[in-house]
Length: 512
Image (cartoon, rainbow, N blue to C red; front, side, top):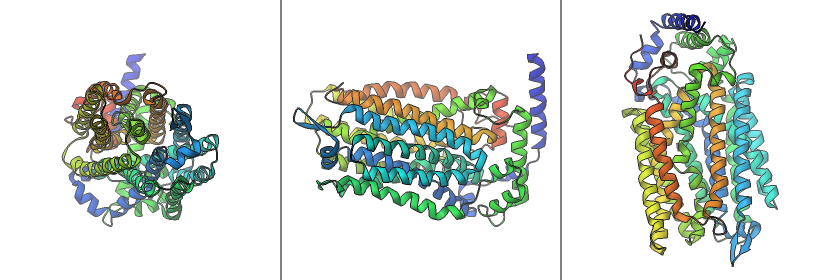
């Protein structure tokens, strides 16, 4: 019975390969350089940047809260006094962050379902409406419980934005620049971080409630800009083809394609890719299918990639202002360190865009993680020395320089996570991806305050040892299980996953 099923799968695979044997579009994609493709497709780049405004909002939302935790005015409103210090109870910090991330999980999974029912544009609209309500509640919050309600609402919208952005960008950008376009997510998120830092820096010396309320209100700018562009946003041609709306797919493809693009050939290429996947699986697209057969391997790779932000210290960095305030550094120095770190992060992301044109994803991911391992080792060693102003400064500086790894580690992992899923399952795979990221973030943002708070674990910089060990394990997982996807069409990836090509051989494998 199993043998018969294997033969059926081989037959389906051979049919799919024959269908694509002389795919001129795929050949053109392979022969076009990244920069030539970017020059010919400015509309696709602009819409990819527009879609990533959601990522900018995510960055702003995440860091605005983190930095406000260190503002004296915010502490006077929501903190309690412990041994002469204003301390925001660990349980409230954990609840705010945990509920925000848990709702990201629900937002991601809901978006994965709604995208396939109503389209990518519909989810962007839903996200704009919901996040605007969350921002309003954060601005008006008078109690920790009300503020938690704001984080619950915003978290759902953020999860929807993240999932839909990566799905949409992977489907509208041509192959030569697809990986770079997917890595824009981390660059735009860092821009959001930087905007949050500068917005908060101007409020450090303000001692009334406007110090933090103005910061929260400024977040309305992001859904506002998104709302202005939504009427003009092209729908994903992949979604329209999956809904058998070929004429509409052609209409929207014109809005994102270059003037000399062979639109009929491109539409046929999309149709053949989706049909080939149907021949291979013969199943209806569902969340459950993501955990079956070769799709389970794809999902596992996505989960590894989506844990990368934790390796690069995203949860640690989001708690950095409050963590550093507990180590004794002043608010002014903390924000200065944050600005430096974010500047480095943006530079890292920009450099990585160029590096991705020269190197493949796997080496870049391993390089980024090596940087993290060294930084966490230094952090742990510094914490093991007698505490002084110098050791505290070392811990603060090296914590910010995990941002060096954001480009190669997170940017490249986002590219892989966006490319490995099957076209029919992409929306649902990205829902699972960002849902898992939300779960892992929830665990860490819940645990971290208890690890470093003076009234709890009081670990301080010794947290570096924990992250050092985790980074080494992650490097092994990437080396043995995460393939290189650069320069591969979605159909080529389908073939290699069905043939169970080992991760280390993906880059050298030649499809027939």
